[in-house]
Image (cartoon, rainbow, N blue to C red; front, top):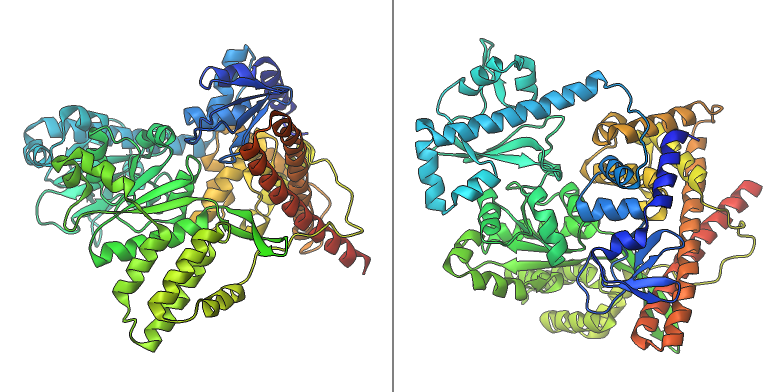
Length: 623
């Protein structure tokens, strides 16, 4: 067991902090058998589907799937990393934390990068208030931004000169290497010194989810190109993994139940100024997988604010494809006739498109009439409606070749509605009318695209269930970290499958990193709280200290561990559902009972699939 002192602290906190009381301070809970029931704090609902299980010390929402213990609840509701939640709960519980390890050179280097970014943001704000900021102030006044908004978003100005920031930072003890490493200065071509990267521009600090400045976006105040310039890639700033205003939007996203993604910095700033506080900006680029992963931790509902021109429509299409790929799948029962049911996978998210009036940005819409923004949100298109409109605009459906293209492009998206046969049939009919073919032809093609797994009983000879306790989860995480750069995507466990917060948090970071590119252990460790960093390093070292495995054997062991952890997760869920189903039957809550029975069936399906894989592995070992 790694770090027994830290694990002991976690257990003490769980024993001393009453989860029901903690959640009850924010959610009205009512007794429901041995559990407590209320409206979910993580998504909007009118019928309670959020349960707290005091005897087990965990919670589960049967509407949005949120689940966890006291640590995950505090992390999600207060937007805290594991280490921060640990310190907060330890203080509340009166539990002493083990001493933190000594700071490493890497820790100090990252902290210096944060410090130089903060100093630069302060410099730019000072410049905005002085003579050098006159053009910037005029531009910002034209945009209609208030002084309170400028201060809240720390907006400033980079003066028109070559080394103003360089000299300012040097006077405050920052080295040239640190300034260059932070992306604030650039080497002259052919040598001969360095100069400020940002000059004569409005400066918008970009923060991470914790509100720490990691980089800058800059808007030119003259005809310089590019009009918008971002910080380069640094150990802190990754353009494809950052969202502007994410730190300010998280509370609004949780309150409203969805996030709105706009393209421009000032669109986001202005909408926040008007109290529309669930807005983030994608830094002027097409939406990336890592950006969607950031939002997925807080909501399953996204609204993409679409420019009315063709380029905006195409960027939104790419963003939709990314979002559909990143969100998890859920298994849904699909009736096939004669009383039989098959199960198919669908995207576990609600993604919509807000169509802006032609030639107008979001800030212009709100300036003219704030109520119009709410109307546009109400009319946000479902994914399928957007794809249909986009396809019609790009193809000539009087031509046989374009009809074929329409079917090829739209049927895979229609398939995502497998869990809602009424809506799926609606769009099949609509496509059939568009291309003038019989609906049965499209249904046949839809079948050819493939189905989800077919439900069946667990095969004979499946290995007996084994408890997926903390040791098993730690072994999995240690082996994963020891081979991180070679691990296939399909063997990455979902954090909701593990019981321990210590294991869950690193897995969250691994999944976010995987969406952005290759997995690198040093980058993963840099993202973690120092206490978790020590814990993960210990697990990795323990895995490396095991007797050497033959080449490829670690992959087989990792797969076995993943299956056993997932099996344990399914069995825990089934036990909870069984109790809740009985309770719903006793109280004659028919709607709730139907939902519980459906979800219970989905988990049974998943468990059967896992057991089939385990049986296949066992059969292979015999031969």
